[in-house]
Length: 153
Image (tube, rainbow, N blue to C red; front, side, top):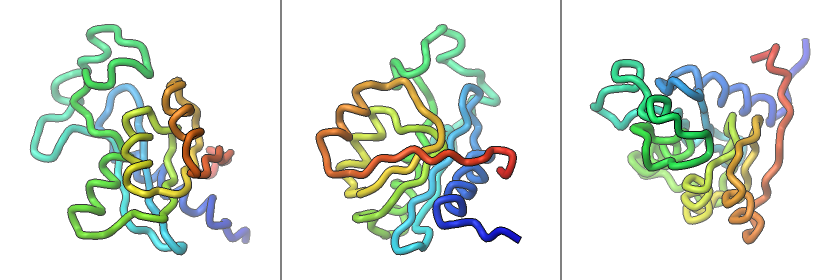
């Protein structure tokens, strides 16, 4: 029996969380961890109490908006945003924590992660957003890709 290391353990959690997503284009999950303990989780979907894209359709698909652009034209709250929001809702700081996310954060999420005090970003899949990469490069946040064997997820 192979015991997963911490990265695999938390990244598998992020992929499990992503299964709750209601986004039609990309399912993303995020897990915020500090001292090897889960602080919060989040997945991408419409704001609490509002209709999901599963019901209404995807505005971005209907308008043929390319991935990585015009994030404001989306009903969904991103997984990273939801994870930080959930922590705040329950009064838990995310300062000095690591976020495990199934997809590299967009520039909107990067700005929020930076201001929230996240110190490490671990991601599984890449994403086309050069501004995000530039923002992280200007900080001391450790950003690293984790190659998870998706057959295990």
